[in-house]
Length: 524
Image 1 (spheres, helix red, strand yellow):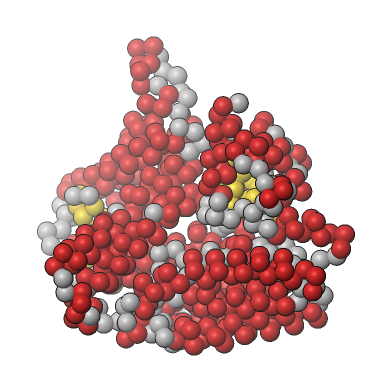
Image 2: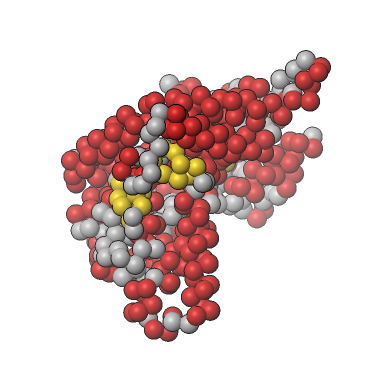
């Protein structure tokens, strides 16, 4: 079980690199697509300026090209994320392998006389980087990324005979990956039509579960969050046929997020895809309103002498959740000291998704459910398309639901949330809940790297270092050498240890910390 968790954790964090490009692309497509849309221009005449529309068109095109080539991005991103070293070579090899895979599928379609001449989508075919192939979507890219990473980790130090020595080591990886991609293409040609049928039927099964199914989707999504495995769960709904299939302007799109952004740039769209309400829109209710109520409840139940400190921390965490949809700083403040609150939070989040489904709220998003996405993909698109006006209405109710539920549970169950901890534990809790080091203990550059490495058992105890949006993810050789208290003194919000995997939660600044550690380890 522990080994499975470690592998699943690595697989989940490998998605973070390709996912990281989506917010910027989504902003470009959201602003450009929304403000160049014919209906928007007709509604707001001041936008009818030629040079302004040209800028919006460029923004829309720049954003849409990313979403049109997500499979390639995921192939490269997964390979880079899972490669233990020489990540650039792994990314190049994955890109080449993805092209070879699709070319191989194209060749098999030609050999079997199955290459469609028109209506490609009706037979499960499409154009990928100029190649007519089967629509394997993001899953095809992920498969290539996984195979490439495995080959890279196994053969990147291979030694060939002297006369082939030039092709040894890293240079061998693009060769062996491309060769493997031929077989991947042939296998997918044989099995993918059946897979497409299975995904379609599974999607129908999800649809048949109705509102209850949407509730469990939201609940499980939130429960997987602390494990860092939530990306694995929601990605198929966002990027594959499991999240729906819709024809937009003559092109068939699979996955809720892909469908939403295709409709975003389609003037003929009168109402966004209903799957958006099931697999996306519920987040806004929780992240913009519900968790704010939880933060206020934690503040109000803190001891009087601790309210000032708790208030500052809760305000910062609540604003982060409200504006950006990043909830870890707030969630980890009560997850470990009062896990019952997190279970309640997950249940409420499930009901938020269910309500967005019931009321047909169809606000899309890039990766979060914060104010930025709410304005771009909700308010600017108009209430007729999204029913965005219902979010603050339900949100107010959700704010008080979280507030009173959390406050009652904290008081009645005497939960040791922030500001209610025992006097003897005060200093410890300050470290475990503050997302940033206090000034008198702040460390930067090599000093911080040394402190973190010492907390992880030393440089020799490190097997692999990586990060996601808020967590430093480390694989260690000996978990007994990991000093949780020492790590918290470097400014960590919390430390999660399972198997040989350690997740140290620092917040959005974790990327800088990870880079500092890698640079220090390379120079020592």
